[in-house]
Length: 215
Image (cartoon, rainbow, N blue to C red; front, top):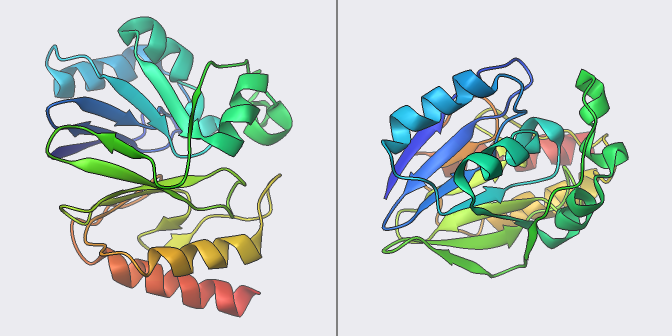
């Protein structure tokens, strides 16, 4: 499995991950505010191989704003944790928060992912871990073969996601981090900031300590 990171092309973007096995997935889409630059970077990584699917770690605009553009370009299905998928299908901006950068959130057709679902990319299987706390429907994706963990805004290399937005919960985030600490985690691929090719478990443990102090 090859993992490439498309770093933010706009100040409001998230990291976007291109995960290439026998099938190709995009994890998150950024805010979609500089489409030509984003598409150019994606094309350079994809090299003519369109993604088979898009997976959204949660429903905030900085991670989902590029969905419609990428679906129009590539025609692939979009998946999200089931609680956030409901929000995205409604286009509920009170949770998606597109208004924070002056953009209207519009409904997006998204398919539901549930705890334990497996996305088979051929040789590598991404297992869905429901990790509420940053949003009620946030998910992480764990590759049990390599120990890679895609965390969205649940945990970063040097911190954890905010819990003061709509549908966030400090108590739920702490529980989610404790669940992640029981996995075999090597690489940590967060929604913002530095990624770690190894040593990801230390970030999770530090995140637990931060949340214990906060709560």
